[in-house]
Image (cartoon, rainbow, N blue to C red; front, side, top):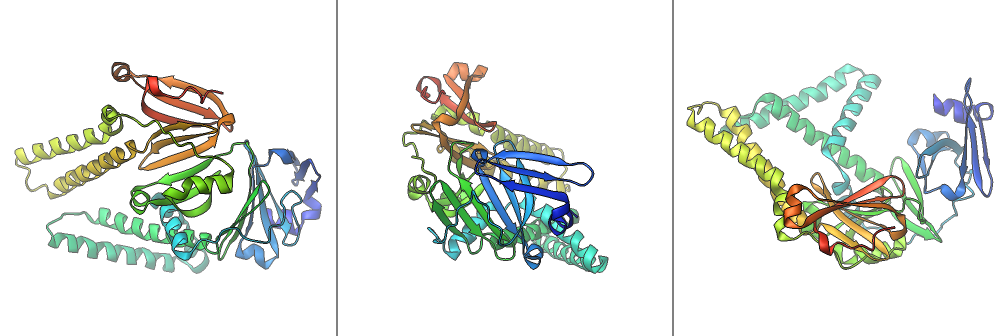
Length: 403
């Protein structure tokens, strides 16, 4: 509906003006909404052309600032005056690097939502029989998995096997979708504009402004990236390199983002082990104690309960190992720019931003940290972003990161 009103009938419902200093957008039917956006506030411009939009020779434009965004439609050949034309690509990653970046960037939970949306779309377009057949195929595969596990004396309820197969199918769909989005990936730069083009079916063009407004480069680590010694690099949540070798990360950030990666990082000491690994280690102990109780109370026939407890122990010990691995790579470094490495879930985020972006810094200590001389540093930057460096020796934490 919005495409029909704001592109097909654009002359009646949309008024769009570009000047050297600002963008004026007014659109609406009964209620008119007007937005005035200074060009200096722009942090990113995304141009998207789906297969549907390409049929109508149209493109969707999103202009982002620190505090929000505006969206409108343009003809394919209409140019944005504040985005320069860049004809020569600077970097073109290889296919293996693109597939690696898609693998790291794909998440099972997001894939489930995508898969559910695809099933609903199939049911709407082709009828419920097609989506029912897909669900029946997943159920049959889950039953085969359950029977195979029973041969190994592992009891798994059918609902758990069905959810596992559904999650795996969702992840595969999400991975293929991500790989298609990152295909034909190329990076270009002109002045303070970094342009990233990608896409196979839907075409994407990200024009990232290299200024201090919410400037943030992020490298996300998982167990896979640590083993491989390489990881994707993001700028303002947009992937700018799908696969960077760890020893080349500083050079990539300097070349593409214009920031120098600080070298001397202050990392948590060994005595911070419980601060990082205490929670998952406690869960593994709780599952182990429950398992002992199950065996000691003659509930040997409770195969399902024992399987769940064994799975809980394995997952908790895995999370403990991940936290221990990330503890050695966490910390904070300060120089012309600041790098904060901190864990969120089972991923380690290495965030790099200019020193001038810091708006506030806080230090906190729990009762346990007071005794051990440790503290947590929380840094607040432009764009209401915050970064936490945990379990650091208080007397060694850098004071130069204060604004």
